Length: 55
Image 1 (cartoon, one colour):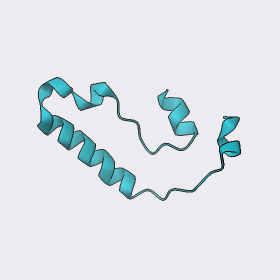
Image 2 (cartoon, helix red, strand yellow):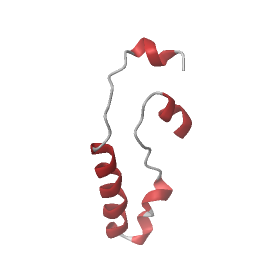
Image 3 (cartoon, helix red, strand yellow):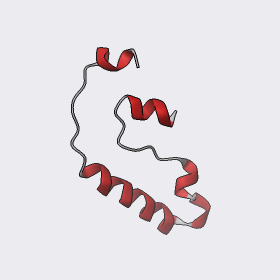
Image 4 (cartoon, one colour):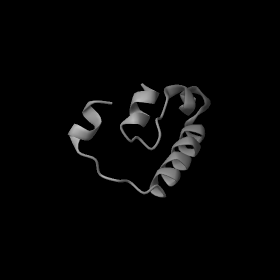
């Protein structure tokens, strides 16, 4: 799933394991904050559905 997401243009994927939900909300906040900040700095190019359908 991660590979497919990357192929169609995902900036990142959030895995449940990455969040370590059982370690508390501080861990979730730290992981998500870092991912959102990174994603905010990425230049996103719009792609048509046809462009990614064959991937």
